[in-house]
Image 1: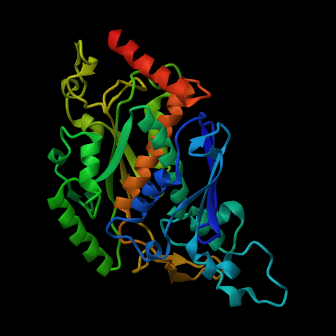
Image 2: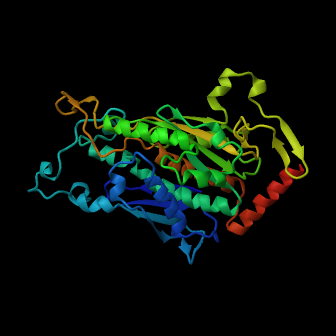
Length: 393
């Protein structure tokens, strides 16, 4: 399974095509729109989210509520396009129109963005040609793709949730999620302003986000994704590029502004002996093989263990600041304060939704890579069989 996205932040639409989904998978637009709505929420979001109302249109690959086995095309219209038709239009400008009358050419790259290096790479003197595609607006359709993957996983008995564990140094209490199922965690975070399971910490996060916004600055944080119901043995130890944790790490780091990833206890493993890192194996007739703990986050040797997969990502503060940093104009080479585009003071809650969906896609892809099936019922039978096999091994 694979997908490709297209579209600019202020273009007419965002588009994606998903190839490799089995036929007969139940799928409706409302299954996707839930994720799109959550991505637009969360405390700290900017004015753009007040303009857009993201909903998906399924334009191919689905008939009467079920996939056909052919490519599935999804479209999300940019409502703000009506204000940008001249600026972002595909047709050449008329010869008698001065480009500066349409909009000033952006020649001042913003620190922390793709602007300068992207301009160098593709030869753009107007850096809008870079920032329009490098914008996190593109994650809209990645959430749409992940929502399709989540639907497939749910039908297989695999559930996933992403949530915030830290913003700007305010940490949620780990006890808030300890021992809770994915669905129990989801019920809590969907009622929370910061998509955090710890209400006390969330209140402090809200205060910090508001203070940061007032100061014209931005803050980052940490998100966590948990996957329950995975069969053991998905991934491989045989080749480096088949390791499931490697694929999940790449997916997490592909999200705009993410700079680190860890599984289970992650970097804390550097501070304790091996006896406090590895998970003892236990067995009983009801569950089969499990682990006494889950410090490795449901992954051993590049493969799923059957325990919940726990992956965490760190998001840096958004680099577009209303108190801009200094930069250099690429035309005059003079020092200026970087240009300001619409932005968020904190997008960590929204990023937890993106993380949930990109991880969902990689999990679904790994399953479809390993269990070949043109029809969804065939896939479900294979997954059920492998779970029973692992239990009796």
